[in-house]
Every structure is written in C-alpha cells, then in structure tokens.
Length: 181
Image 1 (cartoon, rainbow, N blue to C red):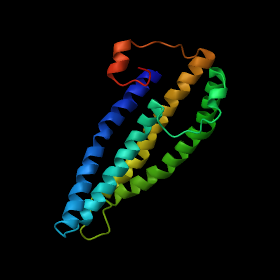
Image 2 (image 1 turned 30 degrees about the horizontal axis):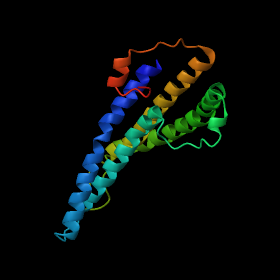
Image 3 (image 1 turned 180 degrees about the vertical axis):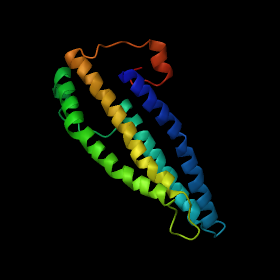
C-alpha cells in the first residue's frame, strides 16, 4: 500500500516541480519589465506568488516521501532502527496527522468560501481566480497526509510485520522515483 501511495505523491511532486521553472520565468519577466521597461505589473507579482505557493504546497508531500524535509535528528543515530521506527510512528500518529487534519479542516471552508464568491484580487489590475490558489492549500496538505500515512504504514510493517511487506520490482521502483532506489 505504501508503495502505491508513494508513487502517487511522487508523481504529483514531479509534476509540480515544473512550476518552479514557471515561477522563475514570471519573476524574471516581472523584474525586467519593472527595472528595464519601468512598467511594474501587479498581475505578474501576484502570479509569481500564486505559482510559488502552489509549487510549495504540491511538493511538500514529495519531500516527506523522499525524507528530504527538515527534521531534528540530533539523537536519531544513537537509537536502534526499531526505536527509530517507534518514535517515527508515534510522531506521525500523535503529532503530525492530527495537526495536518486540523489544518485541512480549517482550510477547506476557507477555499470553499473563495470558490463560492469567485474570489479575485483586491487590486484593480490583479489576478482573477484567487480561489484556485486557495484550493491548493488543503490539497497540498492532503498529499502530505497521504505521504505520512504511507510512512506510518512502513513503520508498522517494520515493527509488527503488518501489513505484510511486499517488495516491488527494482526497476519499477527506480522508474517512478520511489524513495528507496
């Protein structure tokens, strides 16, 4: 199960990573138009913020799957793998998942209200469709939650041999960017 969940999160993360190129291009165009052409654009500035936020939110789950997120592992090396798995599982179940669930439950109505009112920028020349960006906030956290559930499943498999571990084919893992190449 965790292998399939990881594949989903990695696919979304890889797709969203292309947004960083769009962020760079929009920022360069905005800087060029502002400082060379002396014509600033509120729409370009907002577009760069929206693309940056979307790319960040949609790649957070990817960072969890790849174990590239910021962690405080000062004592981790001193513990056995079993103790590490217990701490990881407890941290996910008792801290991370409840906090992510609370954040999603707060952000879904926030995004829904933006959809209902077809929210747009308050600036006269700003971007329409702000509700699309606001929807990326809970969506990105859903992918983080999926990644955390996958990680918790791997910890329970290691600790309790449940659910039964099934090793995916080596080549398939490499081709989809599975975290354990």
